Length: 194
Image (tube, rainbow, N blue to C red; front, side):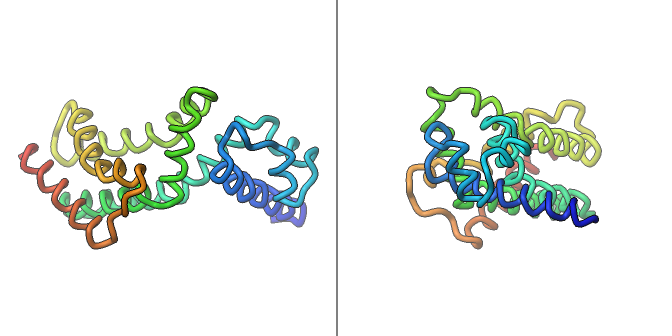
């Protein structure tokens, strides 16, 4: 990587780190490009060179948050044992969705849905299709299901159930509780498939 490319990567990383901090603390509507540029220690002109609009910066920020986990989910689906693959996937999936960062993102989306509906559509388009596609393929290949999408949605719903309490400020599950929840939800799913 050349020095110029390294410098660009450093600036992009600084912008995304600042944007995440500002979006999650101030919200989308209150966040402004001046504040993000200042926190990144860059000029607003430089910020706009990398991200021409606030919605594009928001999308890139949300994509970066999701990418930090999505690759880790999918690696588990290569495990030989179906149950082990699903439990490992479920555990990692729940850990991400119950993380402080993700809960803060969900709260931001809920709070600002009426003022900035474009952020909901933008957020929903990031990563959800990849997860559904990967799981549908796994269920089709491993279990011979021709139309697995309903089972996938129901299973993901079981895994995401503890998020409701976390969104309301209740204590989140610890790692041991997450693993137990993932195991029980997966076993319930497997009973329904076999």
